[in-house]
Image (cartoon, rainbow, N blue to C red; front, side, top):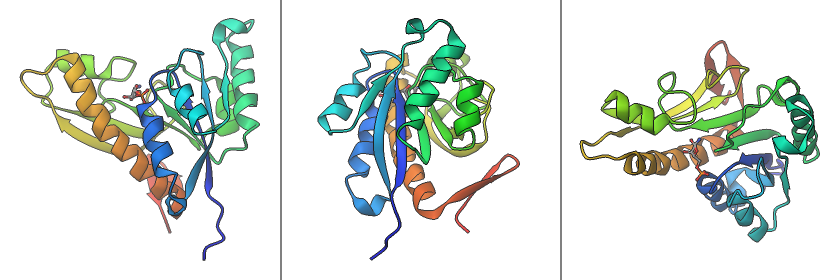
Length: 206
Ligand code: GRF
């Protein structure tokens, strides 16, 4: 039997937490190789916090407005995450850009899942922007967060078709379904096999 410890994940959310739910489901199997040790949010209304509580996982909330400035918020968020000693921090629909302090602590092991095929359509309206542009293929990107907006080294991407009768909602849901599968597959793979970054490439295993 392997004695390797499971990779410790702290997941950051702002919304419903369907990506978090998929991770929680996957981590029920010890063979997955990772466990969610805490869930953090930037707002108490993030519905995903309830999913974590129901699973008996510690939660924390750091609201920007509760701090004197953005830097103080960044310091508080960094401390809150650090307290759970994560190996990986996952932004799963976390709608805030972290600051220098956070990146100094977790840079290189802070991942974000974004609902577009980067570098197309960065920012918070990926599906809407893809639809308005008229692309025929959309999707999701898992990447290592850097100081830019959705500019980090890409770990994996998954494509879905854009249909003629799509609305923002239908395209968003199609992307999210594929995005969840990708997130679960890739986080497990990184946890079990290890990884490193070389230039703009992520090398898994070896
Ligand atoms: C994901 O599609 C993510 O890419 C985007 O927000 C969505 C989060 O959904 N930034 P959920 O909260 O995991 O359901």
